Length: 416
Ligand SMILES: Cc1cc2nc3c(=O)[nH]c(=O)nc-3n(C[C@H](O)[C@H](O)[C@H](O)COP(=O)(O)OP(=O)(O)OC[C@H]3O[C@@H](n4cnc5c(N)ncnc54)[C@H](O)[C@@H]3O)c2cc1C
Image (tube, rainbow, N blue to C red; front, side):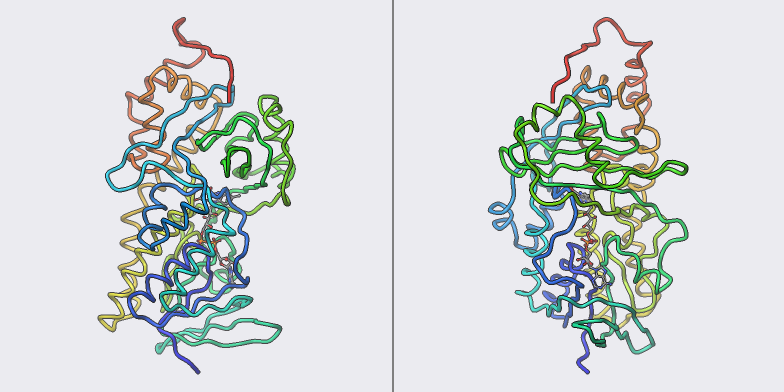
């Protein structure tokens, strides 16, 4: 049986980028996915500047320019309907723009980048189990109605929020953190700009709705929600319908029509409790709970963990050391990069995602535009999330609580 250096399971951004980086360094890589590509993935399709920087490193900038819609700002609408806007801030490394690219296109571009680097890809290959011993791994998969076995020295799991395989291997965290999100594509939408629209009006809290433009009149429109004990989570269509029932959105969707189905999918945000490695096995992307708990952004984290894991694994292969202890170094690197972001983002989500604080926060952003800039930088993780809860910031928010509002506080009519 052919022996690979690494088998990567899952060809989303995390898996495909890991495979591409490993193949570029000369390792023999097999990438497996249960679907043939191009395939759709339920997502908001927004690429942050940090995601663009890794995709640039993979050589995909020209493709993204052709396939994507460039966005240059963010607008946030509070539960009471006030909107603040800010450009994507300047960063020493990342570009000052993002893109919205349908995942049908994006994931195929990253896969093709890996194929050019020498990755072997098998679609329609559903991995059912992984057997491990001191010599390596055997991946057991179902393909075309029969079982096949593939062998490698190490396996990378990049299965996203599909947890069945992780459960089979006993690799799910004790307490899993999930959000539910839903999206649909619309054409004929009016009032779109080059901004990512994040809206808390009519979206169920804690959660938000979004309108991410794909052209001057088409958009990816969706809503996300954190399940709460004792509260029934609405179905995908109901969640989206509730968001779109906002009378402020009505005129913008008057001539719009939906293209394709409304699709829902879970989002895992439990990196803090997640396993990220085991014997002969490394986990990247959302399979390690790596989605920002505040924004639901996971493509850039999947790409960044792919970059970290592949750099680390290349070193392990060079040293001929794939032991459990050697792989622990990947966990250290990942925790150093993300643990702090997750602790604070979870905290911010708990504190801010309610109308009592969101409304004053957006009012404060209206009064002090530098606060909007800080919020956008926090959402993009340019700023330490701890900055958003500094006493000076909280004081400004408190000054905009209803009872504390000064007569000078602007009370602008709601716009988009
Ligand atoms: C509605 C919604 C909106 C979102 N919006 C955004 C956004 O705008 N921006 C953003 O950055 N993030 C967004 N996210 C999060 C983002 O989609 C994910 O975090 C991202 O796709 C994670 O990438 P990944 O490579 O880890 O996993 P995935 O992209 O989920 O890829 C996993 C792959 O593994 C394959 N697979 C799974 N199990 C098996 C198996 N047993 N055998 C073989 N193959 C398998 C799947 O077919 C899939 O191709 C959103 C998520 C949702 C649900």
